[in-house]
Amino acid sequence: MRKLLRSQAGAAMVEFAVALPFLVLLMIGVIEVGRYMYFGILAAHAAEAGAEYGSQTLTTAADTAGIKSAASADSAGLSSFLASPQPLCLQSTGTENGTTTVACPTGTPPAGTIEYVQVTVTGTFHSLLNYPGMANSLPVTASTTMRVLNQ
Image (cartoon, rainbow, N blue to C red; front, side):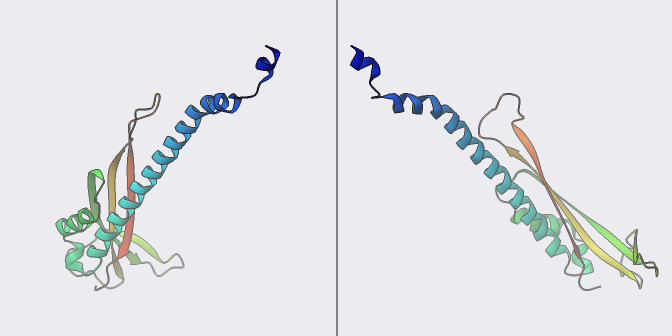
């Protein structure tokens, strides 16, 4: 009987059974964080694709539907996707600070005004499981600003 009580057989299996739930939760958490980061990368690439389209000429910079279409084509996998392009103009002030933000004119900008296209992409990340005390969906946002090339 004493030999049976001092036996170590099966102790490792019991310890593994105790530690297994914590290891599984840790693995699921790492997977969820990785998925969230992946969706962030998708949003950044979609914003960059929209800004690249809009930065070609002044005509494409004003083409909101085309910018949204370019961003949408590069956002596969984002649910509740929304692209928001907007023009951004900087004008030289002639001082050391350099520039100030001004309202973008329609047509060809006056001398000293540099037009940019800023695209913001927002989406929603939905987690695989419902965790107590945590939201099931998280917002994913990315923004890119590019200078319009042919002004």
